[in-house]
Image (tube, rainbow, N blue to C red):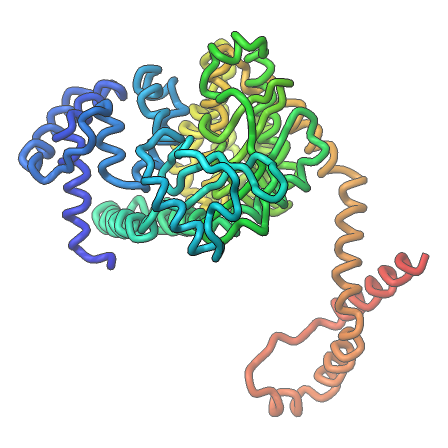
Length: 511
C-alpha cells in the first residue's frame, strides 16, 4: 500500500545512513556544500535510532545500502560505475554490490531448485558448488549437468525477494507523489511514471523465464558481432525462479589490473564496450540495460562476455532514429539539427523558440567539446541537457530512461578501463553507420516496403472498407441513423490511396 505509513520507510532511509556512518561518507563523496551538510545531519541525527544496523564488517555506505534492501542495492550498482562522480574509493566500495553480496544457504537454493524443476538436484547435476556470486535478486552456483557433463551456471532467485522489493518500491511511489504535491514544477518530469517504469523492470527481472528468453533473442541479434559472447540458456532446467545457462569463463571486467596482467588491451576493451552497446541499441533496438562490471567478463581470447539479462531495454525504430540524430548532431556540433530533431519528435513543445533552444544546446555542448578527453562525458552531457530541456518545458521521456541510464553505466565501465577514452570518438563510427543506413533513399525504400506489406496484410478487408465508405458518402442521413457509436468517416482519398498501395504491394509480391 502506498499510504503515509511509507513516511517511516523514507525516514528510516536517512536514519540508516546516519546510524551506519554512511551519511558523512556520502556528503564527502559528492562534496556537498556546508548548508546541505548541516541540514542532512540535523534531520538525520534525531532519527538515528530508527536506522538499520547493517553488517558492521562492511564499509559504511555498502553497509547502509545492503541493510535497506534490494531497490537501494540496484541504485548503488549504478553509482559503482561512476568513479568520476563519487570518487574511486567509494566506487570501489559500491562495486561489491554487483556480485558479492551475502549469499543465502546452498541448501535453501537446492530446495528451491528441486521444487521448481520437480526433480532432486543430485539427479540433475553431478556437481553443485557453493554460491560463486550473489546479487540483489539472485545468486549463482557453478554446476555440471549429469547427463552431458557440461559445466553450467545455475541462477536461483532469493527467497521472499518479491515482498522486499514491493516494500521499497511502495515507499518510492509514495515519495514521488509527495514530491509532485510539494513541488508542482516537478510534474513535467513525471516522477511517478519513472517509479512505475523502475517497478516494471525489477519485477520482470524476478521471472527468470523472461531472462532466458531475452538471452536467446539477444544471442540471435548479436550472432555476427565479432568478439562478443552470450551464455545460452538450458530451457529444460530453467523455470520462473531457476535459470541454468552455459558457464562463462573469463576475468571480471571490473579488475583492470588483472586484465592488463593477462595481456588484454584495456583501451581497446573500453572502446568495444561502448561501441557494442550503441550498436545493440541503435541497430537492434534491444540492448542489455544492466551492463555494469558485475555482468561483464573478458574471455582468454579477448572476447567480451555479457550475462545476466534480467533487465533489457527496447526502443522502436523511430525513437532510435531520433536518438541517433541527437547524438550525431552533438558529435558534429550541429546544434540547429539537434534542436530541430527535438521539435520534430515532439520532445519540446511547439510554442517554444527553436532558435533559442539551439543556442541553449550550444551552451551545453561547446564546454564539453572544449575539454580534454578525460573530461568529455556522456553523463555530463545528459545532466546539462536535462537542465536545458527543463527550462524549455520538455517532459521526461520514460521510454528513454533505461537507454539514458545504461549509457551512463556503460560509460562508467569504459572509463574504469581507460580514463582517457574519448567517448565521442568511440561513438562516432557506430552512430554514423546507423545514420547512413536509416536515413536516405535506401531507408526510404525500406520504409515504403514496410508500409506496402502492412497494407497488404489488410488487403482482404479493403473491399469492405471501400464499400462502407462509399455507401456512407452516398447515404449520409441513413449512415448517421444506423451508427450506434460515432466513428470517424474514412476520407475517400485515403481509401483510394490504400487500395492503390495494396495493389502495388501485391504486384511487388507477385513480381
